[in-house]
Length: 105
Image 1 (spheres, helix red, strand yellow):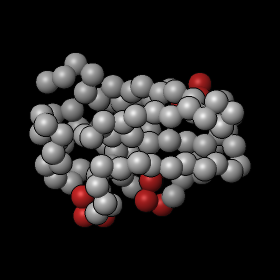
Image 2 (cartoon, helix red, strand yellow):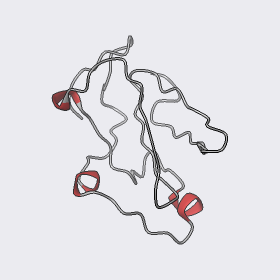
Image 3 (cartoon, one colour):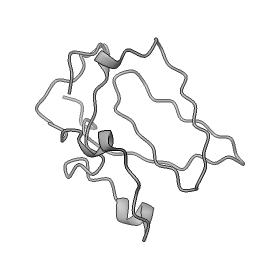
């Protein structure tokens, strides 16, 4: 198993810098906006298929994203969908070694 599997990495995307971030196929990802408005665009490798969508709860204790440091005193506004995602399972095979989706989370 890859030693970074289940690890968190974060960065700040900035409208003035217009920086981007590449997320390879098979990597879980998410984002939070720190302003009232934001424009966020994905460039995908294929069309969106809802039946292939997977998810992990935003505050998963295994991945342990430091939300207190990121959000300070801000309470995040989450969709009903984002509140019901399952936790990360470090023993589950989410993708094959070549990045092919193996099943719903």
